[in-house]
Image (tube, rainbow, N blue to C red; front, side):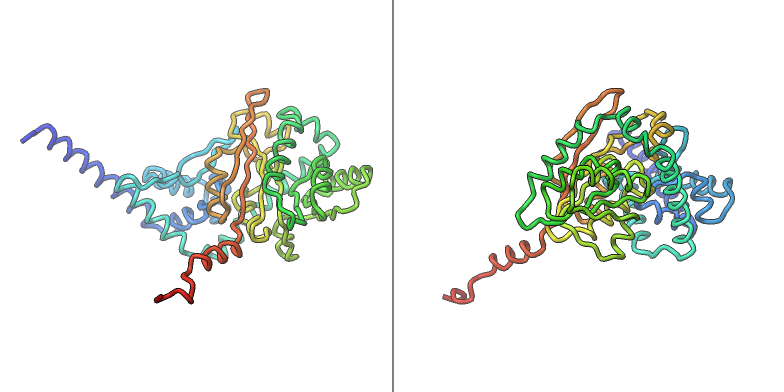
Length: 351
């Protein structure tokens, strides 16, 4: 018998039991479970979580410390701010499997009305912060944006990814956050109808004026958010989001909304910053988030029911990288037809 191996195995097993105990201890509190529930899609700061659950900062910090010790949350730095999110779990160990099972069970529960109200207030505060920036800097938006990346670096690849999957029956396109409206001319040429959606009246007016100057007469300008578009029962064949995700309160929720706005077989094209540490972008460009890991965007899209297509990664000055991504909503009609084609011919059954 190999005594050393046996002892090592016992130590490893004992560590696993201790780790499991921490997971179960962390899950033995209703508030902590609901914290995990709302972290399914979004990351929040400790003050935001304290406001959502109407508790003191020290109490919330304690809950987060317990969850972090159990490996159920991790920190994400955004400039000088620390946000908490759920880790990516692969289920390759017994303890990771326990965490996954716990989170899957939690996600089956509805978020309480009180917590929903708190989340809405936090998102509104984030949105107001972004809107206030664009209200102050609408006239200088292009100059601020080009501190990070020139428009042509991502607009051309975004158009190409859209053209690669564009079909004759695709007629209506939605651009979320058109900014000054530079990409609207491309979309106006490619589609019969264009909808420009922005929650900044100042930026939307600039886009409207540019479209008028260019003689673009197939564009509808809509002030609001994707929530407003859903309430109006808008359905489109394609959606474009150029350099917008890092400005929105809940990027994962925005992508989820896009799934509901798309017709079956529709396409979503996103150009966005990869995660970076250029904290000056928060003040100079009004960024709420310092870019995103490509796996984050892929995960949000997958959870929303989108299939991943082509991706391009473009290095730009000042250490930034832009990712241009293509996703599609499966064509349920085509899938149904394919399933029917696989069925045996009734005339040949039993022959």
